[in-house]
Image (cartoon, rainbow, N blue to C red; front, side, top):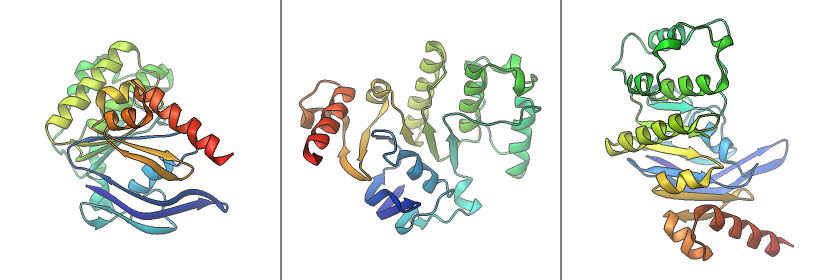
Length: 239
């Protein structure tokens, strides 16, 4: 699905990614974890075509990622904090996105129903709470049945019921062949969802494999403790 070979990226001469090689398999949930500034968001933006690597090869379905509309139409994106035009309603945003996609593509309205969004679709975004905006953010990501979904801190600001509903939707979409790339600091939820984990540290990949294998390597019983152990071990090695 997504392949990255020897990816390098720096901002203002500060290295962010250093020789990253990874694969995001089709039909699985791949979680990218790591400390702040590890390069997780930068990699996501590369897949979206919003950031270009300084060196290396990044491909989706064998085609080089270059920001063209053809492959981006197959991607759904849920940013950590979506910025919507304050004067628009959710219904307006849905209509605008439908128009940009060239008409009325097949839609997935399930989250509009299960997240109880129908009553707020006609309400201006400026008066909606952060949690309601995040529920709309989730519904928009799934709306056009994308082949790949990139979710950045997807349960941030969601109440427990909405968070559980979204996780159920991720599971059902994966069962239908959708591919997921998820970043989150809530490692307990990734332990529930992820088929694979990529652990970024200091701009490189410290681990890539199954969550249980990471826990076994670290000698811990949870993904959160395993990640913390590897980060502490790396800090001791660096010092």
